[in-house]
Image (cartoon, one colour):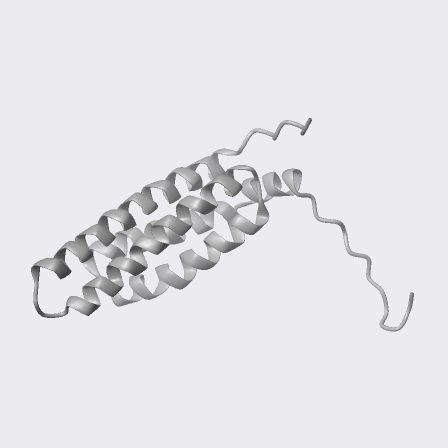
Length: 138
């Protein structure tokens, strides 16, 4: 029988809820882009591409939420990578509706790396302390 998980800190619970909201918003954006592609003749491929990309991101984020809730470092690292790679360019470009989502992504990444959240990950998946060794020594 597995030991019960320690209680999640507020910062991590807030990040999980924020990622869930972001996933729903990206799903709505994906549906909007794909619907726009069916109703318009111009830029059809662009809208379908954006809709597919946002839909895939929404699904990926939802799939990573369960391991994140269990305190898996890999989920935190993957969500951080997605949040930074997707969030920064959208925020820099200044797309009106998506900038809010991008800002929320970056804020969720920040919440996952605050000391309280990091302490939780250390409890759920402790890392062994590395001893310093000189090259060539055993």
